[in-house]
Image (cartoon, rainbow, N blue to C red; front, side, top):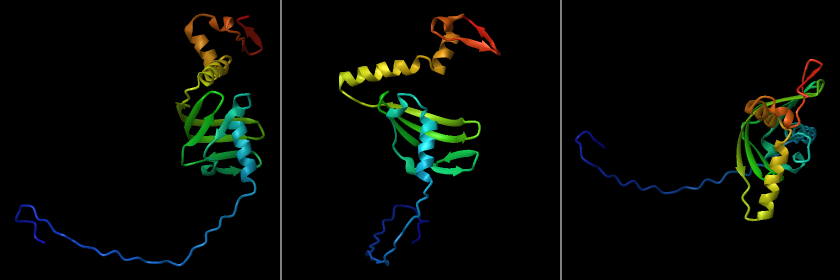
Amino acid sequence: VDLRTGGNKFINIRMNPKTYELAEIDVKGKEDPNWWRQLDLFKKMFFGQNDFSKSCDLINPYHINFTETSEKLIAQTDFPVKVRNNALGYEIECILTYFEYNKIRRTTSFNIFPKFKEISTSDPDSLRIFKNNRRMAFLGSTTHLLSSLATGRFKYRDEGFILKLDSKTVGR
């Protein structure tokens, strides 16, 4: 076909389908016997250990891979971690860039980029419960403390916070 002369050229190409039948393939995976234990530990450290964390469900746990040593549990995934918090009324999609639980120090470090979506419901009682639970989760949180410190001088005292520098109590 020579298209150098300009103008539109239409070409009909007719193709006949051809079916290839392949031999059956049987794929079997070997389940890591430690994976479920590692998943339980991950959820405990990732969700925290309060009343609201018990209402969290991990929607897609099978995308998470674990590496474990005697000192650390490391979680890694190439997919967003999806969490449903039935107490607060949120579905959260988290891009997990880093997760490490240090078993010796009992410290957890992780970095996420979360995207919150409210669980839709037309039930006014559920909405009231969600809002009340969100307020309870906020009170006493790090976000609450930082908001109290940012809004004015010594407001954190009125909201029940006690700050300590070294071993000295500040703001009683």
